[in-house]
Length: 197
Image (cartoon, rainbow, N blue to C red):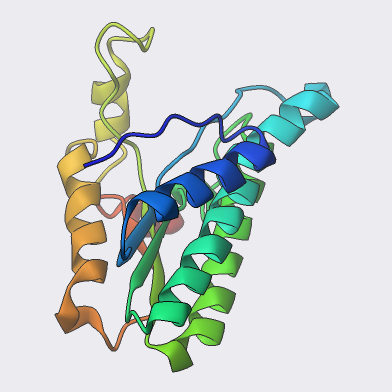
């Protein structure tokens, strides 16, 4: 395994990460665009720099990485997989997360378009949209947030990293070859529940 640090808030760093990675490996079969961050604020308070940072991390850098990896896969005839990470906020707005949600909406549009363009090359492109996830102990401020979120979710708990990993794994299996251009909500049924209330 290789570890290469990169600041995906800077597009040139995304290019460097892709180039350095592809120089170290003979072939790359799977790309998971998992980087993400948001700044909680009313949209009218977002500065140009804050908007650019969020767009770069959440959409531009995944786009750039997808370009590099798609070219690599096509050149080598690799029937690869690209999995992008979106958010439930595309489908039910997160308060004070307009820029983040908009960038992830672009991820879902990108997923659909990439899937269409890459399908003839045997490359499948899908996305996973996580719902409310477990808060990180010692990092997130509200210790009651998990219980509060869980009350809004029909399965009675917030999501775990393993839930998202299982969805990503599915999209990378040979058995999912007929599935492309899709976004899978992994939210414990939250969206369907909210739409009924």
